[in-house]
Structures are given as structure tokens and as C-alpha cells.
Image (tube, rainbow, N blue to C red):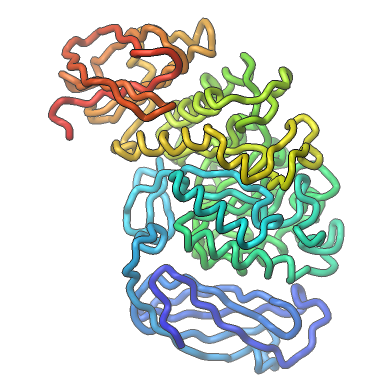
Length: 525
């Protein structure tokens, strides 16, 4: 058997000797893995059609591993008591996913790190329909392009849903309404190579397990609790060996009494088990931290500021719960999973969202809470449009360009520059500090809101202004003197450094448009 590298994927196939009318419910198979250091990990196997079951496992130690299967039907000798071994070797390539390992929360729980402690900057693109609509060649082209731009995460939906009622072949993930009558294994076999390709191209995978908006299609809304959990368990068993961040539910209302369904499902699916990070994707401007703050399995506060650009929408982001609740305990990373999508029609005004609006929402999101990351999206890519068309069941989104045109929109290049700006800094040390401003222009006019953040040690500050305006600063919280550099988020160009020694000072960007101001203590590198 070919060796598997550490943090790669080991796979084994088993064939049942019995016959099962309902393989999802009639039988369960688990695989017990014993590590070279005598640790034990139990992983669910999954049915892959006919008499075939598979198990996939991510080894976290080098050396020889052994495994044995445990089947609920002990008489099925094809599934019960099977044993084997495999060798795990070190990884010697340059893929960051395999070099550094899966993700977990940092020690202070404010951002994500790899298993080896390397900080991970979340820059996600949104391809909700990507794995169900693309061909393999299209997916390769897309991943190559986004990798070049600097994206680190791809978000997508794992099943049929409101915006993708069928896959490329016109099929759904399962038959049934509130109850799964038959699982379509072929649907997931077609996803498999695209899923593994994500890690192979260096991306962390962020799949939505159960899209949950209130319609007649989405499994997170239509399926009963029991069947939603059955489907989610299947997906976690099938894809849990890859480097992922699970999005348990997508675009639903999880507030108030509705939260209890998702607390039950989350606990049953993840709590007390070996797992990777988990978040939720709520509907636009729905804030659900209070509903899930006590849930051990709820690792990341995902939220959606949505596609509005008027006063109310912008104030929700700049002055609302994302900017306030990050101080609640226990700490968690805050990530805006769906800010303004480029070329999406803005709510109410029905005009296309511009690259400036995309940048504004992204930089605000990164600086109003401890910096952890942000997501990006555009109609043609999330919908995976093959021609100019309005996305299914999204009449107010506007006409989407074909995906290969949409992925080249300028906002995505701006996101690559955003990542470069932050990853040149110790971004994980940043905490919001409104006190850096003696006056907040956004109080009078929210479109002028200035987001300011600094490191607790006073060595670094990052300030974003969406328009050219004078900024009155109070640098009492910083070590001085500081080196001040303006960065143009549209080009990445930097101004000449200016030394500032005063506690209170006034600065102004060197040109029109939005700008980032970076302040570093002169003794800092």
C-alpha cells in the first residue's frame, strides 16, 4: 500500500456480505485507528453505493498506523472485524495545507491557526454552486486563478439548495422531502474529486452542510431534525478527512426558538468528537451569537452583513453587534462570511455593488473586531453562471456574468491586495481601538466611518478610511515615534514614510478614494 503523508487522506474500501434495504439507517460502520504513539481515533465509515463502504481518515502522526472496523451487524464479515495497517510519512512539498496541517483556534481564541501554530488568514471566495455545477476542467481553472490571487478558502454548498436545485446532470443529493427516501451516491461521487482538489491546490474547504433558508428545496429547512442530522453525519463521514471549516447551516434564521433545532443538531454532530472548526452562516444582518455562545462546538462567529449599502445596513456593520460583541466571553474569531458581493444589486437601490463598496465592507469587517479574515463573492461565481443570466430564485441579485468573466472582476484583485497588506503585518495582534480617533466621521455620516485597530503592545496600528478626509488621531496608546505609511488598496502602492512623534496629530491621505494608514513604532521591523 502506498504511504500517506501526514495530514493527507488515507482511504480504505470494505464490501458488505449482507443486503441492506436502507443502508443509511439499517447498518453503521466505524473504523478504529491506532496511532504509532498508541492513541485511538474512531471515524465513521460511509456507504458509497451497492455493497461498498469507505472510510477516509487524516493521520496526524508519522509512522505505522493500524485500524479495525466495528459494524452494528457483527455477522457481516465484510464490514465487521476488518483489519489493516498503513504507513504515514512526512510531507516535503510547499502546499500550506499539508505543511502546516488543519485549523484550530489560537490560544487566545481570536483567530485561526494551523495545527503547527502558523497563523491562518481567512480570505474566502464564494462559489456556492461550484462543486455541483462545474466540470473538473472548469474547477481546475477556477482554483488556479483564485490561488494566484491569494485566496485561502473556498465556500460552497454540498447539496441541492435554493440557488442550485439540481447539479450539472440535473440530479439532487437525495430523494424525499422531510425524510430522505434514497441517497444519490452518484451526486457525491461527482463532488469527490473537486473536494479533494481544493486541498491539493492549497485551499481550506468551507462547505455548507445544510442550506437552511425557508423554501421547498433547501435540506436544512425541509428535512426533519433526524433526517437533517442523518445527512450531515454522512457528509462529515465522507469529507471529514480533508482540511475543512464546517459551515453547519446556510442563510437560515437561527434566532430565538429556532436556534434550538440547530443547537441539537450541532451537539449531536460535533460535540465531544475529534473535529475541525465549525461555524454558522446566518441570514443577512441576523446576529446569533447569544443563541450559540454557550455551545462548545460553535467555534467561529460567522455573520452576513449582506448586500445593502444604505444608512441602516452600514450602521449595522460599523456600530452594530459585530463591532460590540467581540468582547463577550468565551472569545471567538469573527468573520463576515457574506459582505457586499461585487456586481450584486444593492438592496433597495438596485444598483450594482462597486469594487469600492466591496473593499469598504471588507476592511471595515477586518478592523471592527479582532482581525481574523473576511469573505468575498460575486454573482457569476457563486451561481456558477454559464451565460449572462439572473440566478435561480434570486430575482433581485441582478444579471450574473459567466463565471469565467466574473472571477476576473477587479474586486477580487483588490482582495488579493488586502491579504498582502495584512499578511505583511502581525495582523493577529490587532484589536479594535476607536480611541485612536479623536473624532469619528462616521457618527455624522456612516459612509465616512473610519475603522481603527492596534496591537495591545502599542507597536502597530491599522486605520482604514473609505474616503479622502482628515483624520484626527490620538496616539497615546502607541509607542512613539511611529512610522506612518499610506497604502492604496486599489493598487497596493505605498507612500513615503513619515515619522510622527506627537500624541495628537492630523493626517490626510495623499489622494482621492479609500486608503489604509499603517503606523508602526520605529523600533519595529
